[in-house]
Amino acid sequence: MLLELRKQINYYLEFKDWYGKIIKDFKFDYEKDNEAKNILSNIIKMKSNDWDFVGVLLAFCNAVKKKKNIFIFGGGPSLEDTIEHIIDIKGRTLFKRSLTLAADGASRYLKMKQIPIDGIFTDLDGITKNEFDYPSFMIVHAHGDNINNLCSFKEEIIKFNNLIGTTQVKPNDLLLNPGGFTDGDRILFFLRSLLSPTQKLYLIGMDFESIVGKYSKPHFQGNIVGSSTKIKKLKYAFDLLKWISKKMENEIILINSNTKSNFFRNIPLERIQDYNFT
Image (cartoon, rainbow, N blue to C red; front, side):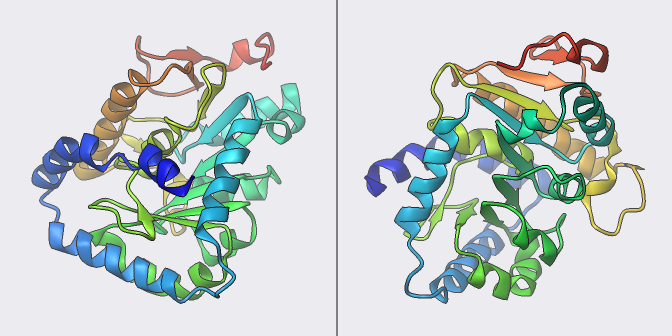
């Protein structure tokens, strides 16, 4: 069962061309990505003997399959207004009866609004150690630029039971490579083979323009204009969403996103009241 699940989720070979393009375009260090993989693997090896990777992975897959609606939250500038409006119109029960997955720092706002989080996908640069107390699952990613974060969060990674590790390079026995680039698009890559065709994915706070949301980093005091590198990363993330969506049967819907595209349906705030999330 585990081997089959790993085969389903690992997208290393299919994503390899994208990865090569990304590290070349951003001048990332392949050896550093490998080093990060080894560091996270070694930290995971320090987990207690009763940690069961098979059990954690199966539990996450079962959690994904149980809910028809899946909400994926990004840290973009539309996050707060969208969630506030949905709570006012539909109530928190909409989120409670759905699967909720947060990309990195978006989890800080969800926690503040007391919205349950089933899983946080993070490279550890948008959260604090307090977020390890909140979700059902943590999916921690290793790459060359977050080695210091992996070391800083070492104890939290060791202690958190329902933890899944991911890498950007060739996966090993302890880490998966689902494909994807940013925390947000990586969620869809991870889910792609676990979903039934009837499940719908709603993306909130997924904005791919020049403004970076304040929940992207813990030290941000407000939304900011992104650097040229950040804007390029967001463009890649959106291109990857379009690419992976073609390989999925599920409907993917943006809610109040600042990114307007004919590729995905975008539900504006004024239409939420009439939309039936069933």
